[in-house]
Image 1 (cartoon, rainbow, N blue to C red):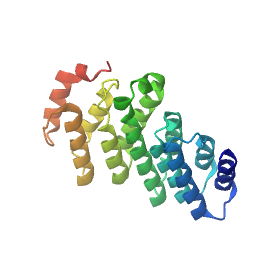
Image 2: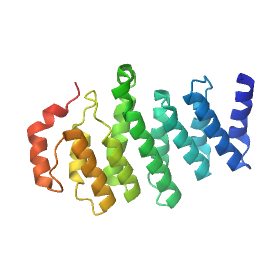
Image 3: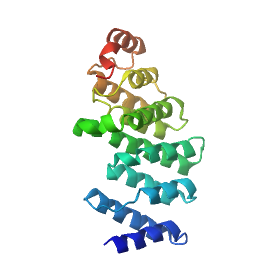
Length: 216
């Protein structure tokens, strides 16, 4: 009921001593929202990202955002990535990685729902920019790998895919093998080509075909 939902949201917001309970409630309410409940968890997730110092609760919030598929929450992914992007500790790396993965889930939405991209165009564009930045600049191979796979979901022609494809080509020879595999898999998915790790061949293809990557 609405009253019970408010009580649960209050606990998530205020019970700083019981981390496990807060995480369980975040997961419970996210499941309810994904299955049609009208519970408004956006403000609660926003507050967690803004002020929470417990990385596990923040991670639960990020995963919740990805699972809901609510395009109104895309802005929160941008917030959390910006908050943690300059931190090199293991917990921040996991949060950034989860943020990239959640962004990849959102990027699949325009393939399923035509109206999403029109209404939330700028948010989708910002997610794309965030993922390109993570792929090119992040020091963590875990984050770069998730960013690469997320960009590979950008198959809808509503996206301008020039910068994502160019960024993937730039790092096709990433020294980390797991990142290099993710990059190549995504390039093959986006271009239907396979030049392996031959950067020059990819660049030639890009120069000849970049017009096809412009949003339509």
